Length: 51
Image (cartoon, rainbow, N blue to C red; front, side, top):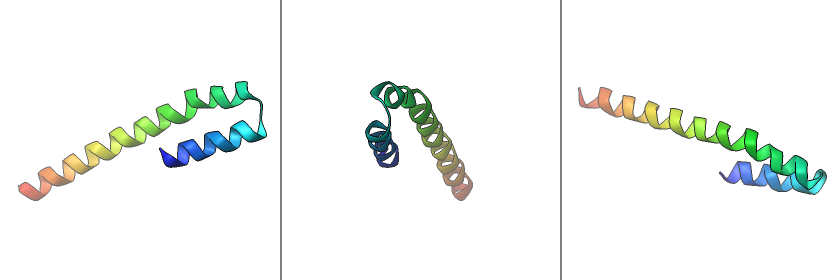
């Protein structure tokens, strides 16, 4: 989330507001995907350790 926020701040400073706002539609779903995949990997590893 921190990295995404920093990217958005830089994009807002360097480009127009519309371009920075549209970047949310790309960056945040990618971030959510990483969160979800990380959660599944952690759950898989935890299940493997218990067995």
